[in-house]
Length: 138
Image (tube, rainbow, N blue to C red; front, side, top):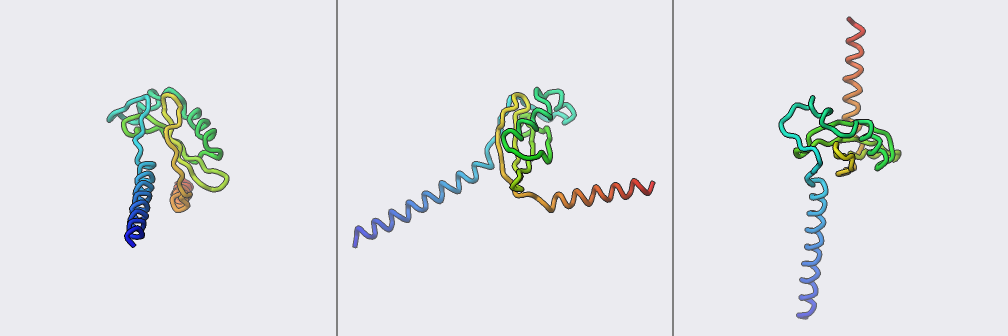
Protein backbone atom coordinates (compact mmCIF):
# COMPACT_ATOMS: atom_id res chain seq x y z
CA UNK A 1 0.00 0.00 0.00
CA UNK A 2 2.81 2.38 0.90
CA UNK A 3 4.49 1.76 -2.49
CA UNK A 4 1.26 2.61 -4.31
CA UNK A 5 1.02 5.98 -2.55
CA UNK A 6 4.64 6.74 -3.35
CA UNK A 7 4.00 5.86 -7.02
CA UNK A 8 0.85 8.02 -7.11
CA UNK A 9 2.56 11.01 -5.47
CA UNK A 10 5.59 10.59 -7.74
CA UNK A 11 3.34 10.47 -10.82
CA UNK A 12 1.48 13.60 -9.76
CA UNK A 13 4.75 15.44 -9.12
CA UNK A 14 6.03 14.41 -12.55
CA UNK A 15 2.84 15.62 -14.28
CA UNK A 16 3.01 18.96 -12.43
CA UNK A 17 6.65 19.34 -13.45
CA UNK A 18 5.92 18.63 -17.11
CA UNK A 19 2.96 21.02 -17.19
CA UNK A 20 4.96 23.78 -15.47
CA UNK A 21 7.87 23.36 -17.89
CA UNK A 22 5.51 23.41 -20.89
CA UNK A 23 3.79 26.59 -19.74
CA UNK A 24 7.14 28.27 -19.11
CA UNK A 25 8.41 27.28 -22.55
CA UNK A 26 5.22 28.53 -24.27
CA UNK A 27 5.46 31.89 -22.50
CA UNK A 28 9.17 32.30 -23.20
CA UNK A 29 8.65 31.62 -26.92
CA UNK A 30 6.68 34.88 -27.34
CA UNK A 31 8.45 36.83 -24.62
CA UNK A 32 11.94 36.42 -26.02
CA UNK A 33 13.97 39.60 -26.14
CA UNK A 34 15.08 40.66 -29.61
CA UNK A 35 18.71 41.70 -30.05
CA UNK A 36 19.99 43.09 -33.30
CA UNK A 37 23.12 44.75 -34.62
CA UNK A 38 21.83 48.34 -34.89
CA UNK A 39 20.91 49.88 -31.53
CA UNK A 40 18.34 52.69 -31.59
CA UNK A 41 17.03 54.86 -28.81
CA UNK A 42 14.29 57.46 -28.69
CA UNK A 43 15.11 58.57 -32.23
CA UNK A 44 12.52 59.53 -34.81
CA UNK A 45 11.28 56.75 -37.09
CA UNK A 46 12.22 59.01 -39.99
CA UNK A 47 15.89 58.27 -39.31
CA UNK A 48 15.45 54.48 -39.40
CA UNK A 49 15.81 53.92 -43.19
CA UNK A 50 19.20 55.67 -43.25
CA UNK A 51 20.43 53.43 -40.40
CA UNK A 52 19.31 50.10 -41.94
CA UNK A 53 22.04 48.18 -43.73
CA UNK A 54 19.59 46.04 -45.75
CA UNK A 55 16.69 47.38 -47.78
CA UNK A 56 13.01 46.73 -47.21
CA UNK A 57 13.00 44.69 -50.42
CA UNK A 58 15.87 42.51 -49.15
CA UNK A 59 14.06 41.99 -45.83
CA UNK A 60 10.88 40.91 -47.61
CA UNK A 61 12.80 38.47 -49.84
CA UNK A 62 14.55 36.99 -46.80
CA UNK A 63 11.24 36.63 -44.94
CA UNK A 64 9.61 34.83 -47.89
CA UNK A 65 12.67 32.57 -48.16
CA UNK A 66 12.08 31.59 -44.53
CA UNK A 67 8.29 31.30 -44.79
CA UNK A 68 6.96 30.72 -48.31
CA UNK A 69 3.98 32.91 -49.13
CA UNK A 70 3.08 36.50 -49.90
CA UNK A 71 4.10 39.56 -47.92
CA UNK A 72 1.12 41.30 -46.33
CA UNK A 73 2.94 44.02 -44.48
CA UNK A 74 6.53 45.07 -43.79
CA UNK A 75 7.76 47.70 -41.36
CA UNK A 76 11.08 49.00 -40.09
CA UNK A 77 10.84 49.65 -36.36
CA UNK A 78 12.47 49.82 -32.95
CA UNK A 79 12.09 46.49 -31.16
CA UNK A 80 13.66 46.19 -27.70
CA UNK A 81 16.09 49.00 -28.58
CA UNK A 82 17.25 47.52 -31.90
CA UNK A 83 16.35 48.32 -35.49
CA UNK A 84 14.44 45.41 -37.03
CA UNK A 85 12.11 44.62 -39.90
CA UNK A 86 8.74 43.08 -39.04
CA UNK A 87 7.41 41.25 -42.09
CA UNK A 88 4.02 39.52 -42.10
CA UNK A 89 3.83 36.62 -44.57
CA UNK A 90 0.59 34.88 -45.54
CA UNK A 91 1.19 31.20 -46.33
CA UNK A 92 -0.86 29.15 -48.81
CA UNK A 93 -2.52 27.43 -45.81
CA UNK A 94 -3.86 30.90 -44.78
CA UNK A 95 -1.69 31.24 -41.69
CA UNK A 96 0.12 34.49 -41.10
CA UNK A 97 3.68 34.43 -39.80
CA UNK A 98 5.42 37.50 -38.44
CA UNK A 99 9.11 37.30 -39.32
CA UNK A 100 11.45 39.62 -37.44
CA UNK A 101 14.75 40.34 -39.17
CA UNK A 102 17.84 42.26 -38.11
CA UNK A 103 18.01 45.46 -40.16
CA UNK A 104 21.80 45.27 -40.04
CA UNK A 105 22.52 41.70 -41.08
CA UNK A 106 19.22 40.44 -42.52
CA UNK A 107 19.33 37.50 -40.09
CA UNK A 108 15.95 36.10 -39.00
CA UNK A 109 15.66 36.87 -35.29
CA UNK A 110 12.23 35.41 -34.54
CA UNK A 111 9.09 34.03 -36.17
CA UNK A 112 5.59 33.98 -34.69
CA UNK A 113 2.59 32.28 -36.31
CA UNK A 114 -0.67 34.17 -36.01
CA UNK A 115 -4.16 33.33 -37.09
CA UNK A 116 -5.26 35.43 -40.06
CA UNK A 117 -6.84 38.52 -38.55
CA UNK A 118 -9.83 38.87 -40.87
CA UNK A 119 -11.49 41.48 -38.65
CA UNK A 120 -8.46 43.80 -38.90
CA UNK A 121 -8.32 43.46 -42.70
CA UNK A 122 -12.07 44.08 -43.04
CA UNK A 123 -11.68 47.28 -41.01
CA UNK A 124 -8.78 48.46 -43.21
CA UNK A 125 -10.79 47.67 -46.37
CA UNK A 126 -13.77 49.70 -45.09
CA UNK A 127 -11.53 52.66 -44.21
CA UNK A 128 -9.90 52.51 -47.66
CA UNK A 129 -13.30 52.39 -49.39
CA UNK A 130 -14.52 55.36 -47.32
CA UNK A 131 -11.44 57.39 -48.28
CA UNK A 132 -11.97 56.65 -51.97
CA UNK A 133 -15.63 57.67 -51.66
CA UNK A 134 -14.69 61.02 -50.12
CA UNK A 135 -12.08 61.71 -52.80
CA UNK A 136 -14.74 61.42 -55.49
CA UNK A 137 -16.87 64.08 -53.75
CA UNK A 138 -14.23 66.80 -54.06
